[in-house]
Length: 148
Image (cartoon, rainbow, N blue to C red; front, side, top):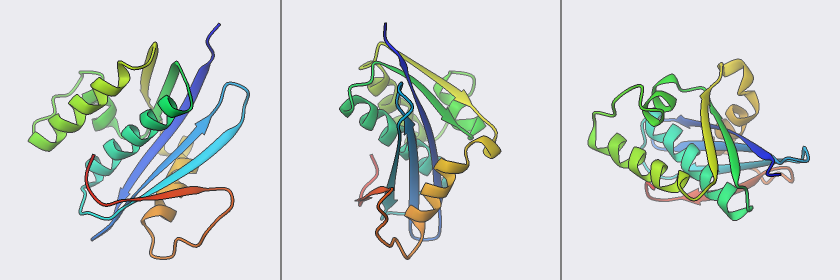
């Protein structure tokens, strides 16, 4: 039986930098926190997509087969689920990349959750987008210089 990995993602953008937060809960309840500092101008929606893409890549690397991806952006989750259309070229590119990555799993489900349930990922994304990314033992951090 394949257990489901739960992935909460969040993205935040500040003036010249953005941050992505991913919190993964493995089937046996272990929690992994991962942040990415975006060193390029990104809109909030782009940062949300970067978070989802980071989560999908991590899930793949960790060997997950079934993913439940939770994000608090109604727009992004709606685009991925085909409920909204991505109009801008960049949004369409993010959407295509997301769809391509989801094909590498047996099952991926995307659900929109209230911000209040996405606090951990939100906190990680804020740490990632802040100036002082002091090294923390409970958080893996990477720097990304270009959009996915």
